[in-house]
Image (cartoon, rainbow, N blue to C red; front, side):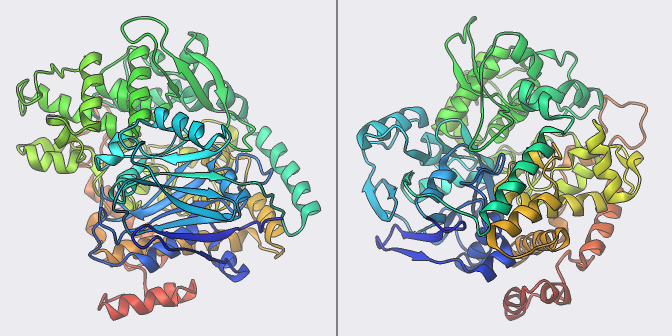
Amino acid sequence: MRKIAGDILHVDLTTGKVWREPISKERLLMYIGCRGINAELLWKHVKPNTDPLGPDNVIIFGTGLLTGTASPSSGRTTVTCLSPATNFYLKTNGGGYWGGELKYAGYGHVVVHGKADKPVYIWIDDDNVEIRDASKYWGMDVRTLDKAIKEDIGDEEVQVASIGPAGENLVRFASVMFSIYNAAGRGGAGAVMGSKNLKAIVVRGSGSISPANPKLFHERVKAAKESLKSDSGYEGMGLYGTSGSLYGINELKVFPSYNFQRSAADDITPYTGQNFTNGGYLKRKVGCYSCIIGCHRYSTADKGSFAGAYTGGPEYETMSACGSGCGISDTNAVIKMNELIDIYGMDTISAGSVVQWAMECYQRGVIDIDDLDGIDLRWGNAEAAVEMIRKVAFREGFGDILAEGVKRASEKVGGDSYKWAVHGKGLEQSRVDTRSAKAYALAFAVNPRGADHLHTETFAEFGMGPDAREVIKKITGDENLANPYLTEKRAEIVRWHEDCYAATDCLGFCSFTSTALYGITPEIMAGLFSAAIGVDVSEEELMEIGRRIVTLEKCFNVRQGATRKDDTLPWRLMNEPTPDRPDADDAVNSQEELDGMLDKYYTLHGWDKETSWPTEEVLRMLDLDYVAEELKEMNIAIK
């Protein structure tokens, strides 16, 4: 019987050394597991001035503490490293079955050090761990690789975490792919694997795991399932996936189009989950490990010039990044773009973002068709967008510039192109127009990995159901504050959600269970955590662990040189009001508005408002003394 947390497996690709590190109960009470222990390991093993694509960066895979159990939708894996996109902290998260298989092999975390001198993959077969030659697999796309490795090992059930050509070519937003369609996409973790000549980590586990108090644990699992099923959005999420809410999102003017030149689509229907389900594109629903929702899609393009394409999804973010963001309403084309992005191993948000940024550059005459190798990259040209996706993955022609991300691409191209390079800290913004969603605006600004929702998902501010309004009432005392156009109490909403999200990640839950649906509450999470490790942990104590993790992640960026000026939003959203809300005075993210929310947010944390840095008092209160001491040794003046 395996320990529920598993051990930490270290693999040094430079020396070939492999070793195990146990996880104490005291460490679990400090960080829970997964994202929390990942952050602690990153602080320890990656120091300032490390090259994100050099051998001194590490890449850390952490499974949820509850991954491998019957807890509903708890099969997530967090990947952590120094981001090649931002040079700041990166945690990115993927689903599928890889994390459960790793737990059954006896490990909760894998830390990869160094760099191999040739392409390799790591083979984990319970206690047997090998670094194997992967030269024959180098250059394969993710779909081809997954099939080839399983055939060579002779086991269709092994789980594969891999990179495609984009990771090999060090595209700064290359993803780590679990199986074929589950991506740890944001921030370029796939490029870090590529820089280490690491093609894949392949896992087979034959053990089982048990919580400290099995009877109580399974009683609480049953209650968690019933709570999740009772959420008002549960059925719709299963039926229509992440795009099921698009009609409401579009009505609120939060759905970006044409590279955020607009915040709504004229015809939202082609992008909706309802269209996928009812229009025949959806062939089956797919669930990740232990999931009872099944929001993941498997879709095909059956007609038109892209007939024959098939892929997982597309999800909400892809429908905006590759659909409305590029002016493409052909659902078949979006399926094709998503297929290529997955098998080449890229982040769908960033890949779509660089294409639409280039489309706007083309629209405004900053680049011409000769710069684009003869590609007519006008808005809505699906064939051109598909070809540009391929060129980015292989760094061909103008694709080589786009492979650097919109921040670096705009610096290369020049002119005013930085104004429509929609990113935060160097990470392309996920597809929420923050000019009409003020809690998201604050959350995106302070997110240590950049302008993105999957660190502090504040979906409840839209107030789209009774469960969401109840969450806002719990946080603020007033359900009427479930209004995305308001700035009141946004700091409180963000602070609560970031602690909740950290606990969600650490336990391995999908964020759709706690911050997009709300059935898995902090109280339920605390109960499951307590039964899992055999120590009573209250809801308040669980949320404080979340706060500790968020603070540690912030301090990693402080050590990297981050200050308050880095907690900002893209130029366009700070300077150009959305034309889709012409009568609204606040249809922009002004500096004055953002500063007011930041001041309140830092105050709630107990951080210094001038620098945004956590104070020594707060660090010691959170038992992060080792962080305080190191920052003081570096002459970083935490007050």
